[in-house]
Image (cartoon, rainbow, N blue to C red):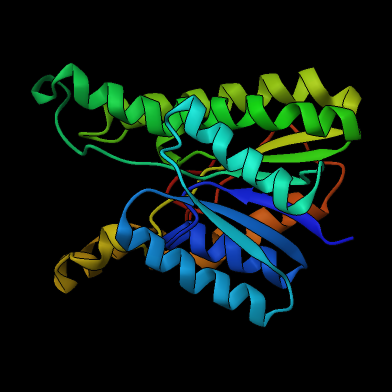
Length: 246
């Protein structure tokens, strides 16, 4: 039977790279989207998955809302059956602003997307994994969860929380053969960098010890490792080019 994965924020960037990698290694993949633009990207991803010989599904749902997360999980179960093998909690946003200039609604929104979505999806998927006595949860944190970043206080708080959530769940469910890990990417070439001036981008790359911005593929590589290595839980991988060395 083909295994099933759910990827939140799977339409583009890191999400797309991980969705397609899951397809390459034989998973049916369920994605969520919010905007019409994201829906079009999900349509492309689904077409690519089907060309690989697997299937997929995309559902309109704001991952910060519990009921809408339930809609995603219910759709996955209805289409693919009562077993979810992998959950990748990837949905994430950034305000990129000095904290004192933010309205409380700004950081409440960010925490909702970056942290509550992770908790909602995990809470909804865990019963199926517990019943199967098998599962793999991968939480996409950030280098911002390991170190301070200017104008990212709320973001760093949410990503640090993701690491704590990962460790606690890994201990709580190890006895059920459910592994929980995190990925903490550094600077990766996603939509956030698309509009950056090329000279500024070169200067940014020069601050990385390896001298380059990471490709989304390196995050998909980390995800694949965490899926296939069945003796790894409660930890994080941080593809970051050497900016942070734990």
